[in-house]
Length: 174
Image (tube, rainbow, N blue to C red):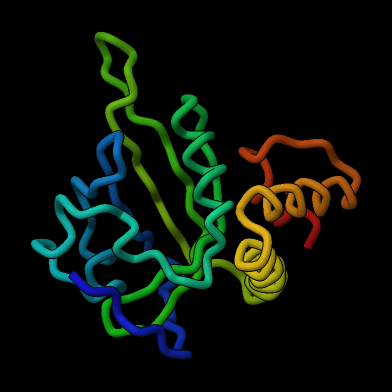
């Protein structure tokens, strides 16, 4: 399935509704709620079994997903601000809470649950600027350089924190 061409039109989200999905341990979608389907514009059949990256917007820096996957693969929950791409090319910003799902018998990670909600315009402005800079660095110098920039950005805010706390910390600063 070809990725849609992004257009500069934001989808207005209902602040009272959550976009929910679940994936297996490799990131393939195993469940999505009706609001997820409504917002992204794909049918349930187009989503189930596909990589969650089907809705990844090209404005998202790779380093965000690199660090996100490192965190959840290690068994830690994480929150993140993400810009997604709908089937029709429009976009939507969300605050996502990623939770680990484990097998009750073995304790092995079997998947992830994600609940997403609308985020304030002010946080989007700050994050969008940061993500633009990270993306620019990735395109010229690679993901590792982008990660170094992100770590320094947080140090400049006065905190030594793990990536699992980054989005919460950014949200606090603004």
